[in-house]
Length: 464
Image (cartoon, rainbow, N blue to C red; front, side, top):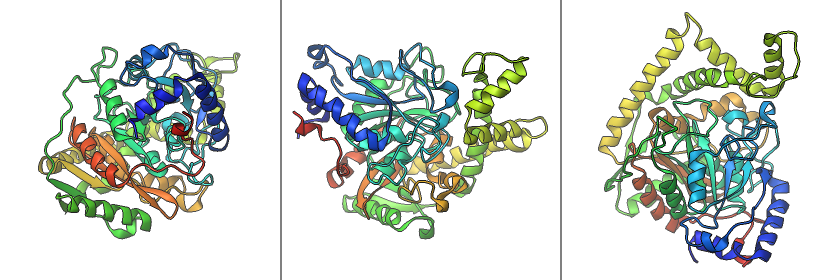
C-alpha cells in the first residue's frame, strides 16, 4: 500500500472523488457527530503535490484557532465566535500542504474524559455508537478512527489526546511541553496543556510533528530543540495491581510487554512512589489555572452576553451562568477556592511542590530507562452515561495520563488490536524531547498491530 499522504493526494486531486468524499463524510458523520463544521475548499492540487503533507485532510479540535472558522471550545458562551487568526501549529501544517477540512467536537473547554460535556453536540465512538469516544478531544479521535481524515489535531491537558486515541484504536501523541507552539490554543491549564496529534499511521504522525515543531515568537514557552532518541535496550513497565485494570486492558498491557521481550528488549517492572499523588496535584493545579484563564469569558470582551444589564456584575453573572456548563462551573469554583487567600498555600502551592517531586522521580527513572510503558486508561471505551463510570471515577482514571502532563514529557498511545469488539492500547513515555524513541518503538508495534477500522468506515483507497 502506498504511503498515507500519497494515497489521499492521489484520490482527492480528482474532482469526482472529492465530491464523493464530501458526501461520504457527511453520511458517516450523521451517526458519529465528530465534526461541528466540515468543508473541503478548492485548492491548487499541482502545487500541493510537491509538499510533504500536500492533499492530506486534517481535522482540528474546536479550541484551536483557524482564521475565518468558528472557535467555540464546545461551549455556548463562544457558540458564535469566529477566530480572527490561525494558530501557529495549524499554519505550519497548512504551509506543508495539509488541508483543514473541519472543526471537531470536544468536552467544553477541554474539561472531560468522555466528550459528554460538549454543549454543541454528541459524539459517538465509531466502534460502538452507544459508547463514548473519550475526551476531551473525542471529535478528533472519532474522525480519524472512522476514516474521515487520516490526521487530526487536538489538545492534551491530562490525557485528552491519548485517552480518546486509545478508545478509538488509533495513535495519539502528546509532545514535550514547548516543542509545539500553543499560540492559538484557547487556554485551559497553561502549564499542563499541549497541542497533540491523532493519526492512522505513525509515519504520517511523525511527519506532522516535524512540521509543527519549532520555536514561535508568539509563544514564549516554545523551544527550538533537536528532537532525539537514545538507543532503547531496557524499558520500564509500571507495576500495577491487576485489579486496577479491566480484563481486556490488562491483557493488552501484558501482551505489549511480551512482544517487547520477544523483540529483544529487557522489560523490568518499576514502581513510582509519587503515583498516588498524581490525581490530587493535577486537578488542584488544573482547576486553579482554569479559574484564571476562563475569567476572560465575561460576556463583555469574549463570550455572548445579554447585551444589556443594569450593571457589569449582573451582565457577567448572566453571561457565565447561561454560557458555561456544569462541569466548567464546577472546575472554576474549585479553582477559585484553592487560590483564595488563606487556602493558596494549603492547596495550590502544596500541589506545585508535589508536582516537583513527581517530575524528579520520573526524571530519575527515565535516566535509567529510555522509555516507560504504562496503560492509558483502566477501561476500554465505556457506555454513554455509564453509572459505573461517573465524573468522579473518570477523574480517578486519569492517573496514567496526567503523569506526563505534570512532568511536561512526551507520550504516545499505541493501538494493541481489538479485544471483545473494542480497541485496546498502551502508552509509552519518554524523556523530554525524546520523541524519536516513541516513534521508533511505535513503528515496531505497527508491524504487529496495524490500525484497524470499524465497520462502515470511509475507505479512501476504494474511491480512487
